[in-house]
Length: 140
Image (cartoon, rainbow, N blue to C red; front, side):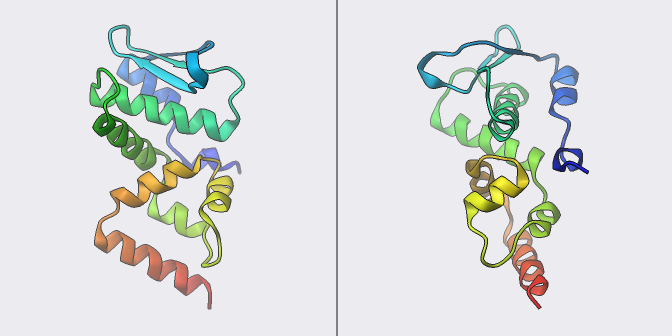
């Protein structure tokens, strides 16, 4: 079963939020852009699956959170929103070993590494402790 089956259906979230998603060239090598006025997400063509899903989730974060513009605080909020849509503690534990690096884990989860970093930022101390205990327990 593909990993995406276990994760949030981003297209459904976009539809429920009244956001249109399209593919078109973007300036300056950007992967995605959210236009709040038109409720429109534009994604660069030819993104790899991990780039596409991570960027779509990030841009949906802007839409759901009502962001206009791209201030650093809004970017962090959109990253965190995306991370919580794409990942759960159980999913990360399932694909993690003590020796795995962030880039390898991101590859296993079919996301960009920044999504894992944003996810870690959203964890409570209790969630982090629980996740680390579960990963350690897998080693034995």
